[in-house]
Length: 104
Image (cartoon, rainbow, N blue to C red; front, side):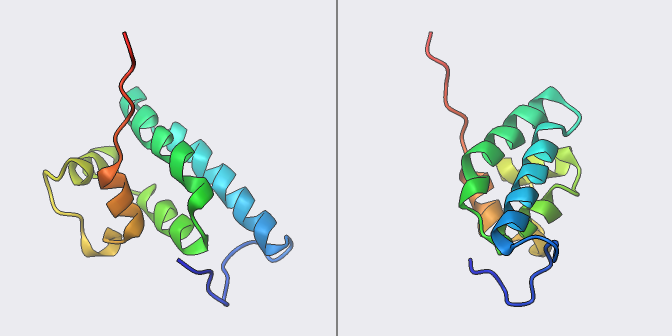
């Protein structure tokens, strides 16, 4: 995923700083979804993958964060198909994401 020339980030910041600010904002939103389960699942995904995303990936994740948790969960589990507007590499990664199992 490459950064488009027509960037939609804060023009007052250098591009890398604007993307870092967006990563922090999305990380916070991923951990504050409204339910502990969604916070843990989506927040853990964000912790693992946001640092890898370029602007295109970050914007795809940002759009996903506007959706309802039950819908995201249904897409993650494959119970319902991912809608075309969210059918992208970020959602593919999210569907493949598994939380590490705690050792006893």
